[in-house]
Length: 167
Image (cartoon, rainbow, N blue to C red; front, side, top):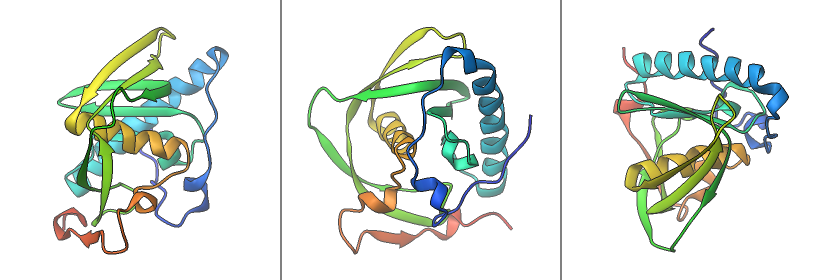
């Protein structure tokens, strides 16, 4: 479809809770997923990073996450996260809505995501490490939560010049 503009930190629409997609809206979900794919690929060309993107990034108020990770793509429709244990780790998180800014946050080491795929089938994916943190980050976007709101403290911010964009 089309690469879309990514909403930037401070845009009020990033702080809204997204709505679930119904089975009857699957064509809309497919359109949003195509736009998410095009948008993340364009972002990767410009900034050199980006593994996943949530619908609110492109001002779509739906519970959709698109992941392009290790050359594989997955669309998560109406995802739900569960955590089996309380094992957490600290990490520097970044976001397409504030390229160059990194935030130190706590994330779960493991999670399971339950979701519908684009054929409206129930799916489940167990995640660990960087995949777990990635889905937690994008899932937060669906609830209007940004990584800056999860900062460990007021000194948990830094600029990464390599992620400001290619010249």
